[in-house]
Image (cartoon, rainbow, N blue to C red):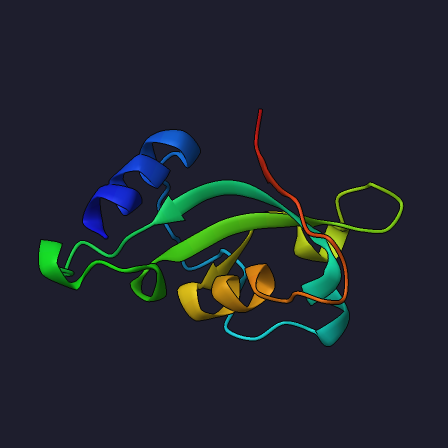
Length: 102
C-alpha cells in the first residue's frame, strides 16, 4: 500500500495542514454526489512506513457542483481518508470523476 500512497503523493503533491484549514470528518449528504478535484495529500509525520494507508491520509479536495463550478463551501477542504473513501465509493447514485488540479 505504501507504494500506492507514494505514487499518489507524486501525482497530487504533498501539502501541509494548518490550523486555519477547513477540515471535515463527515460531509453533508448532498456533497457525496459531487465530482472531486484532488488538490493534495497530507500524511502525518508520526506515521511509520508500515502504518500508511488511505484511512490515515488527509486529502485536500474541492468538490464540483452540478453546474460544473467549484462549490465555494467545499473549495480547498481537508477530508479524512475514511470520508474520501466514502466519497469515492458512493456508487449507484452518479458516475463519479476524480480530477487532478491541472
